[in-house]
Length: 158
Length: 292
Image 1 (cartoon, each protein chain N blue to C red):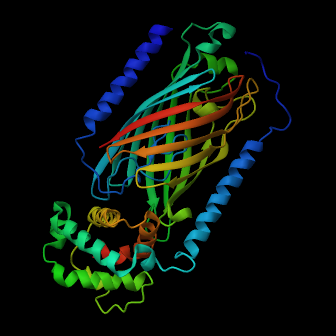
Image 2 (image 1 turned 90 degrees about the horizontal axis):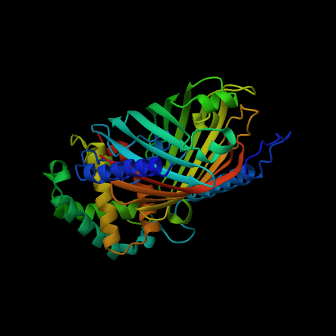
Image 3 (image 1 turned 45 degrees about the vertical axis):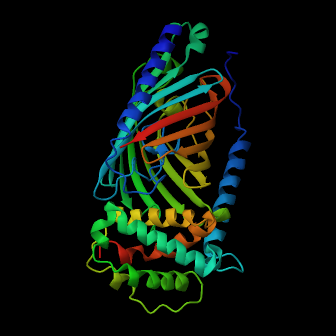
């Protein structure tokens, strides 16, 4: 069990090669996945389940937002009856559902509210929860989040 | 030896119990589940053996938080126990501490050591998030870190040819979570560059007859199967400073269970290669951390 090991000229580092290949394959896979984000045929909107599924999860999401004390401050003046259809049109628009969006830009809609990173993350968590509750597949959820994520600078600290 | 082992086990159980006591008193939970990573054997937030750019705990820009943890790894001939913690300020600075305890009683006979021989060291760390964000924006999250390591049982490393009983590692880490990764799953990638003189992470001292400071590369990748479970792999290149015993690169595959924002459990299969003349050390790694 115990012996002094002779150092060889070259260290057999096959293992390292295998690992590096694995990591680069994974990196490549992720690169491909994120460069053409929506799946070949179906839009993200369709993957979410189309209009009915999206309207349902927005219904649940807005209910959760309206009743979560962690975001009470930022939704204090929100008119939910007005908000729901606008949010649907926006999500439909950005997720390839083919809707026109005539609402405010994200920057205008969130100006002056001063949403913190923490409050933003609460809304992400509630959106995930609402989607899960409506049986929206995790892959579609992640694709929607990836579509929405670039808007964050227009939403937080405005 | 049995007494020493059970004493250490008791200490570990104590930390585990503390984890669950601290856990309910959540303070900082503004970040998304999983984005605090796990706790490395060196005390910094990351995977198991590679520090990531993420900071410990779930605190955002206006919160402070952190994690305490205990890790146990059993290899073919050795055992490693680690307890430690990290505290993060406003998702900007992380300060960490870890006590590593490496059981080398297997070498007691051959090296004529006391029966419960072990190598212990303290690791003090600082990590600063410099730029970017793990999830949002154009840049990945990039952090600079340093780890000051102080060996506490330097006799064996010095006989093996190590030059110093303490050393400092500097590293830069970049981490990114792709929301829409392979298979529609979230995918985390981390790369770390480290300059170090540490032999076996410092457990065999610092520097030696074959060299001193070396630039090494480390990497991690993890696929989040859902919001609570992740599968991943890590690789850590190592220096090779001692002609006494060859040192090889580390590798592990891990599963992480983010129970909630307070408790994280990690299990791994790790391969350390040759350690202290004993060949091909493989083993199982379990880590439990509590965030607050």
